[in-house]
Image 1 (cartoon, rainbow, N blue to C red):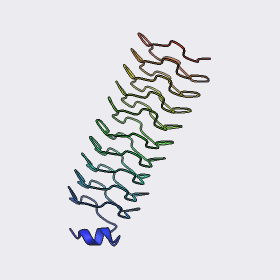
Image 2 (cartoon, one colour; image 1 turned 120 degrees about the vertical axis):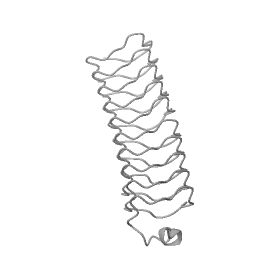
Image 3 (cartoon, rainbow, N blue to C red; image 1 turned 135 degrees about the horizontal axis):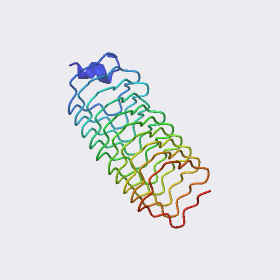
Length: 209
């Protein structure tokens, strides 16, 4: 694989490429086809992946800090990836595995996360406004202070999740599993909670119309 050509932006078709442990920091990979690529352990800090296709790719332990990740990650593996301070607005992460990933200070507004695995992930104060989280697994996730206004959480698994002081105004929680969740002082004005399971949930100080 010609790494220098990739760094120079001359290669746009890298589907299935093996780029494990390669240093591609600050590279312009905008609109590059990386579907099914192996990027485990790769360095992509500060890289531009806007519009890139990473469907089904493997990014286990990948370093993606401060990167432009407004890309397609359909069914991608992002376990243990470092995504801190990255831009994921409108990113397609449907069915992606994000377990043990680091998402502090990321922007996920309008992202598509339906069916994604975010079990136990720290999403404290993360911007998830208008995100599609239908059927997502957020069991035990830390969403304290997160902005989930207008987010679609229909059928999402939020059991044992920490939603303390989260902004859920106008969110759709129909059919969501909130058993044992902490909703202390969460904002739920205008939220849809039809059919949600709140058994054992803490609702003290919750603002709910």
